[in-house]
Structure formats: C-alpha cells, structure tokens
Length: 79
Image (cartoon, helix red, strand yellow):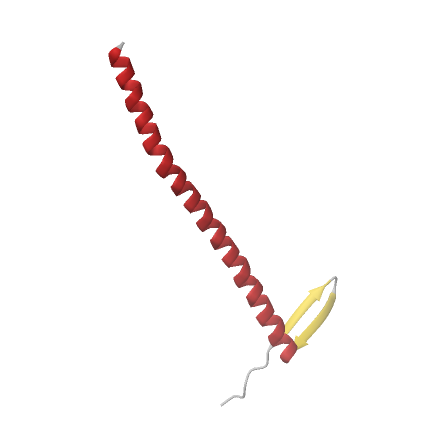
C-alpha cells in the first residue's frame, strides 16, 4: 500500500518556476479554497439580492398597473 501523498504546487511566473511543498502547499491550497468559496458566496448573495429586488418590484408594479388600467377603463366609459 502506498504511503501518504505529498502535496506539491508548482507556480511559474515570468519564466521562473517555484515549487511549494509540505505545510506551505497545504496552507496555500486551503487559502485558495477559502478565497474561491468567498467569491462564490458573494456571487450567490448578489444574485439572491437581485432576484429579491426584482420580485418585490414586480409584486408592487403588477397590481399598480392593473389598478391604473382599471381606473383608465372606467374613466373612458364615463365620457
């Protein structure tokens, strides 16, 4: 049975290669994962906020437009 796997991250910037291994690689991986989760959470919260805003606007505008149309049709009949 093989032993535990080693975590190695290879970063290449401007033609220079850096190898990160051991606890630093784990720390870098965990930090990257947390940043990705944070970005996704912010995106989800923004989308939920947009959906709630549009929903509330439609809940207010649709009945208001129906009332305006009803009042407009009643005014036309009286003239």
